[in-house]
Length: 340
Image (tube, rainbow, N blue to C red; front, side, top):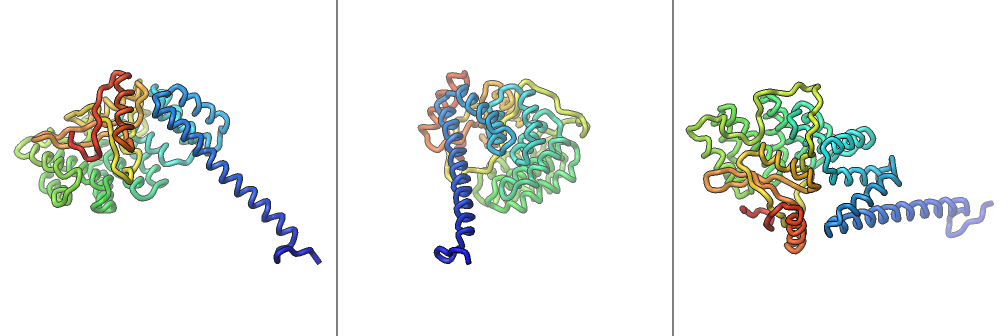
């Protein structure tokens, strides 16, 4: 009869010990991973980007093929200034690692260079790997891509479904509604656009004033002048590869809103979203990655603000502003929701 300690056979006790060791190892590995990336984040916050790159490259090599290695490679790619290298690394990650962020980045890249059909497929893949607000972000971009590719009805269906699914508190849902209305106005369907914008006009939200300006700006004018997203005359075929620009675009919608109020460094403002996208792409050539585009109203005009962030405090944002200035990019600190 086997020896029993506390009701557990000695052989079972050995199994428990092995499991405890494995569990402790997994916890230690997770803590080590967090500690490693905390060091990288600290280096970046201090402006020591080359050291952060070296640390990420070492980590990617040491853990090649693992989730930790892929995460390091993904973060390293976020700092990549060369557009061709950025796209090549994204393609590698997409082949090896099933992560929604990779497909979202691929979609944003292809959208920025005009490969709208390919972008729509990337966003669809990202949505399938996501849930909640992240899924709505990817789906909203898919709808915008379909509209930009000339598939107006398909794109509007996706955008409006995203808006309905998001409800009143989803930024991705509100943005999808805003983009859908802009597309409707561009195609001359003003009544339908007004109905689509109504939920944004009936309650306080960050798109309310922009929605009013969008409608006022197109009243009595040709709808071709009011575009909430690029709608080119020439469409790139679905199977055509994207061009290889010299810089990779920023991920304006690559993450959901932070849960607490944030600070940003505003670095530019444009009248047309296309120009804002081009500016964001050019800044990646200088190693600036955390850039987003935010529509905002200025009197009778609708502007697209370009911001770097978010940061948890005005002090962190001020430090970032100083670092940006040293790289030749002037900006000012603004709080989440600030109009200027």
